[in-house]
Length: 485
View 1 (cartoon, rainbow, N blue to C red):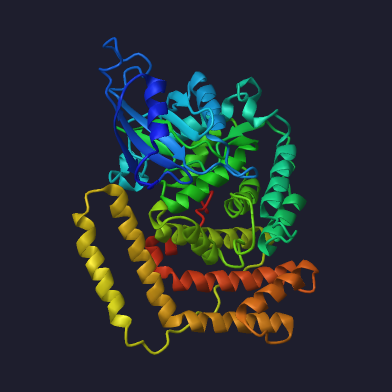
View 2 (cartoon, rainbow, N blue to C red; view 1 turned 180 degrees about the horizontal axis):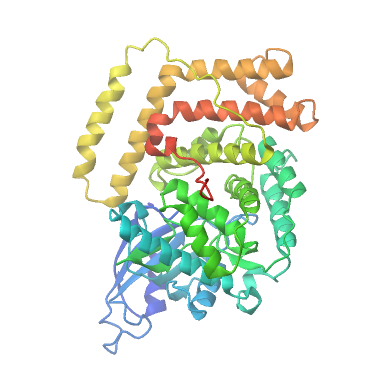
């Protein structure tokens, strides 16, 4: 099956669920871990001439779908659980899509297609940006004022204390990150240890945390939020957990002046902003991002090769299944934000290391510019939005390959020198050095602080090499939480 077509069984299920023939199914860009599809049905043909089953939708629906079953230890909820959450929130007056059908076996849920745009950066009017951002804050505060014990969401389990929920999720992170041979990625282990030792002393109200909340995960139109989307990481916990996620989403899609929005949230929600707890949950969010799916085998660790993770992911799926260029870019962004969050809470005061200098240009270097020029000519002529988005991903990969060609070897030599300094000898290869350093850290022959400094240097150099592929994201970091006088 191509990722650009739906299986016949899914089409048949949708038609039976809503009682109308499917006219078209169009995959759209984005959607994160699940595919998103615009579904158009013939609302006039259900045997009795009305729109029973789909309400006043005009026959326009939205399908969230994953062709692969969800791994047993995944951080994501099944779509059936997400549908439970959406229905409960809709009943509580939160702006969410209506749920029309949940597949009994497959990962598929059919939703109302709510009007609006997801990308906040497309708003050009500063006043409208503020209006939309304020409306989202009102929505988030409303969710955080709900009593989670009164929501009918069996899939999330019982409501306990924020500390208990945090410890449970840390244990889940460790389980997902542990390979079949019992090994665990060193940065995940380090982060999980730190998180477990520093769980905030918070005994206030527990809320429904959306997780991954903020710009890009809500729809807006005419100055207001029309629907809050993507509840696949939701859980019960500390309200500052969601504020940390909001600050993370703000890096990806700038979201007006965050300190103003947080002051509004504090008044509307009744939850006081706690900067230390937000910084804690920033580390938590990035550790979660690094372990979204279980470690099923070698070669997919969070630090010993996130690029290998992208390569393995691409190798395991047909080329048309995903935007590898976009995946590569965001893997690197989250690695950097993870280290920046740890640097802040550990008080290491790390600064950017010496960066690799480009080598003598290769004879074929001009070809990269030629390929990029061709892509710039082709992309505006592509009318399919998914194809256009993936062409941009190809351009990102070409830019990154150009920089790897120019200074990738020099970057690796700098890392080998860092490793040798910590180990006391020069390893036979870069990968051998990484493995030896991870083992030394596991038995504390290399301290967590020194290991974090090494990882910082490594990730910052990787970020430097990817700077042209990353574009504006290369210059973004965690936003301030308060106005500094």
